[in-house]
Image (cartoon, rainbow, N blue to C red; front, side, top):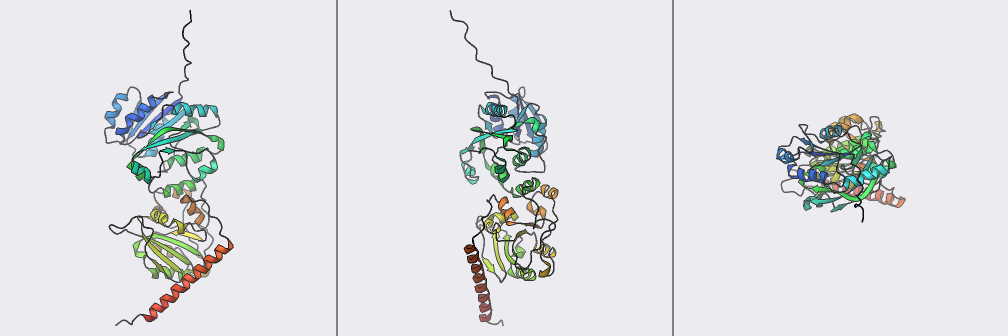
Length: 434
């Protein structure tokens, strides 16, 4: 007679707390919770934190109250909600899940095994499948299968490729910086992952990431968040010309000035500034878009003076303007890019004579930048082309060869000379006013 059938070896219990964060995501919340309990290695705890929802979240959560730890808070802040959940994650590992997403069955098991096999690793991350609103997916340039990449600190310094829904070794993280409104995960990873051994990549699509209209709105206006994170972590140092003691920009300096102010859409004011300082100025002015205008248009008509090229474009703020003129403001031949909320403010910050050199002095420090909510909060801001390229996710510029430099000098000279001669000719042939 055969003996009793061998019992399968018991799987080790999970050591993970899943923190599900929700704000008016009652329509998705049940699927997120179900995906936690359907895990091949179910989590030790499931904590649901609802931040000030006004939808049907209370009714959706009711059948789960005997299995989850539920908290309702009134923070109206994703960062405070995340820290609240982190404080309640007392297990060895913690995983944050947005209520509009859900996990593949083996997500916790695969990520726990990866951390167990790599004792130095502080985080394990994976790929994801993307589903939902197809129009929003196209706007965000998201493919149905999103793949991360093997970890390196150098790559992380340029761009985040690690999802917020990753498995964290709980003892390695104290809190999330609540001053960072967006890109919170990238800010956290930059502080947490200091060595190539500190993260481990599991190349499997273990998260199902839902795309909808709210994802699109969250992605907008993130340039100031990228700026504050880069400055905070020393990846975009406040060096000339953006520090409080920059090297002067003397006569002949090439400077791009951006302002979102329709009062400065005329050439004479820019000509006066350029002549006073001896600068060559590329003035980029954002103006309100006319009703029915193409909001994606790169720019309006170009006006040229002897030392100024002025171009206007529909733009709501400095970030929008920088993106429209990305090719201009990232030009390595520029000496500085200045964001000026008002031309008068810029003029007041500069010396009176070209011989003094024009040092754009910006009274900024790390704390002020990190505490800001928009580029407009920073007032007068000067950056190098290299810094702007970093903000716009562009690689470092290659140095142009001698032939390219000579060609550009000749093009600039001819352009200015012809423009000046045409203006003089136009003035000479214009009929006298009566």
